[in-house]
Image 1 (tube, rainbow, N blue to C red):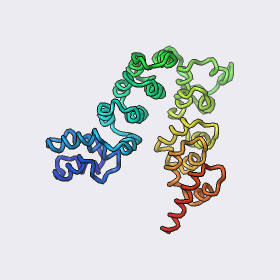
Image 2: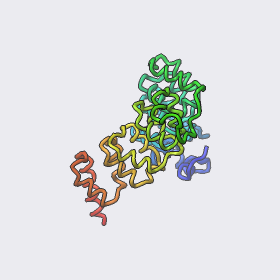
Image 3: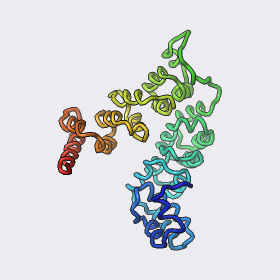
Length: 309
């Protein structure tokens, strides 16, 4: 497993016993994702005391820090271990399900005994369901899986639909007419591989599994994401999915749109507002169309910026 320099410094066999013990206790100066990784690696340390300490720390990892760590993409082996230790914690499992680093094997393990809510969350991992029958079959075997979801699983695991990846135009009928006759699985396939016209249509689909699949299309552009995040008709699910993508979060315009869009979950807006420039913060602080708590946060940041020059 590859780890960054900070983690390597505290888990390497060459690190001092004192330093490894400090990390195993969860007291090293590391960000939550790095701390979680370090603690798990130290549960395999050759020193019995460090191994015991790290194991205890993992089982009692601070809840908020654990959830924060799981917001970042982690190594599949790390997520597999967290799943085993926290298999009865629905909040933790929800973060693991949506973590891009989670392996298909881990998702299938969760799917076998997931609650009804978690089975729906797993069903939103459309690419995984299309690529891995193991996950779909695990969901099908779970008594908590709804009848509606079972029907969707049947479509997910089928392979008799056409490849709509290269659609550029429809000679005999328009795209809208064609889409209205598609099954959910066919719409998903088109959402994942279709062109700009298809993406623009399916991003508005009433089925959130279909609309969220559009965001996983490798052809989607920043301009499309800018339009989506600026639209007040965008769903909170789509905006939450955009906010998870680091590449899109490099765009100041996308971050600004997310902060000012009333459909964006407040927790995400509060987190992103800290990275906005002064002019944008001033507009938000004065706006009457922004939630009071968000405008108040903008004013606080402006005051701090003024104090620190």
